[in-house]
Image (cartoon, rainbow, N blue to C red; front, top):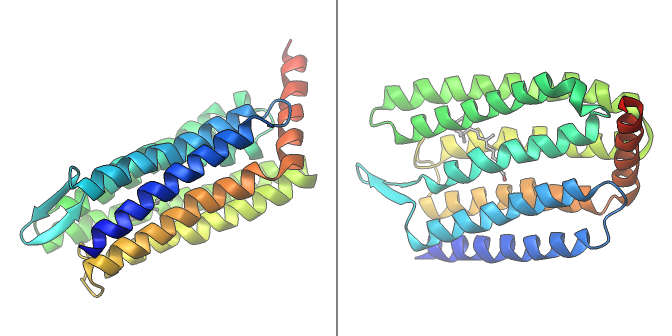
Length: 238
Ligand code: RET
């Protein structure tokens, strides 16, 4: 099946990205190792779940439609980690902003779990209802990123701010595409074939995880500024 081929390609792509990000960590700028660990964890978790989907372990057939629930397990772990990368870059003193970070993560987990509830639903009403709930959570989440995190990053200026803006805009645009692909796919209106749906999610996942990670981890100036900012903060606290 062609789907299996795309899923296997996803596994290999994420595996290669993880190895590459770990290699980049060996030359991480002072104080920025946590970005490499978080980002390699994101692609590592994705590689694992793509493997489980390609072997069929996290795939079910619900009333004749194929349901890749492994995706939601992947997303419920990796999307909070992506937000953590963004938040740690934007927020110089993350200790003062634990509430904001926790709020973003809770909204995000709620978005994915209600999305799973929509996908697993047996009725069209259930799918539509939970889809709307999940989409509202996503809009609030992306709005918070756009307002709160943008303002915090602007306060830091320089390379941190410009890298943050690129990554945050990438996040807002790419994340907004997920509900659209979901609607086009087998959980939604079934406008596109299951094979094409798997390919579209693969492209989105590659861009949102590998593209994002590459832009973050190769921006050494931003990483070292974010790292040293944090050290200054820490010495102030002491
Ligand atoms: C679903 C369907 C229900 C409505 C919404 C969704 C949003 C999913 C998102 C997923 C993001 C995934 C990422 C993966 C990393 O590579 C669950 C598709 C709003 C935003 C960024």
